[in-house]
Length: 477
Image 1 (spheres, helix red, strand yellow):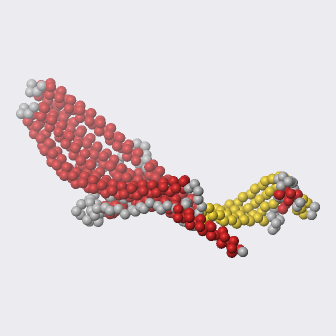
Image 2: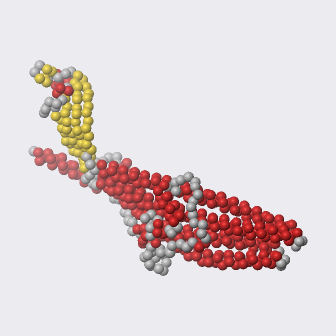
Image 3: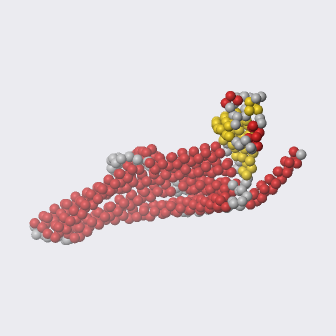
């Protein structure tokens, strides 16, 4: 008889489970396989400067000290570290869902049922002990331990935990991405500060040169060899250069404050090397091969972890279509009077129950969540593909920029040399009245502009190497 009843209930249950399982939709197909070109250029050398730690990549001790301070105090980095802690705690939450929930409860209550009910009539005719009837208003005291446990039949909870782990790893890669960008940003601002110092020195040299020319013109006017117009033109040129000096000083102040902001501190002077800016050299460019980006770039690894988490989310959402198995149990003491609460075994209570539930009707909410999980998975896939493509293009752009800036710097150096010689020639001709003041002014102005452009090109060269180092995935180790 027992076996018959067991099969009587198990057969319909098995049919229901089969029906529910068959109706569960399949997830979207995603893959992280991406194809990248074999090389950035004709070279297939796998030597990659991204593997070089940033403390060895940067040779300037002042810059190294600034970066080290930024990595300790930068607020954006601190915010990212808290995101890691949040993700770590989410793993604990998901891990806890796999384990039984155990608790202790104590309660007290009172209940009065109608006499003309089955319970009331039964209580009225029952004696607790001979001559002692059940009280009309019945109190209830309980002390018990209870447990609830969802059996992870379809790996829903385990996949949710794995998804949380993937997102935790994603936040770590996000932190590494913040690191590499922070290192590059501090270096960019530092090189800009050095270039502004160099430009300021050039402007002040030019002011001195223009002031000397102004004095010559004044002497020539006294000797009737020049006019008041020439004097005023030279005077205006000196004033314009002095104005440029103060503009540069303001840019220096703002750049120093930007560095201090990155370092998480209030404005103060930035220590730096005052040697010739144009003599600075950068690290040798070794770009390796594009496939190394997949292992070196933190943003690519972050996108990959997000895709893995999204894939697991789809499995979790699909498991919602399947039946869930819950087990609950309790054990404790219960009595209507405290004096009976510790009377054994009469006051002992216990229960053990299993519950299987499956959604059969009105599954629209589950379907909607499943479709949303599929869409988020596809979003993560496209984001991963876009991140890889963007990484390759960024490196290709920087390598091209470095090559073109090298050629540009060589030409601008020749231009500056030629204009420096032309200043001496123009001054000699002007003193001998063989050139007018306008030619002298234009020569000085062209020389100043070319010198400032040369400094700017040098800064762009240094920054391009830093950006190539960052885009290849360096700076976070």
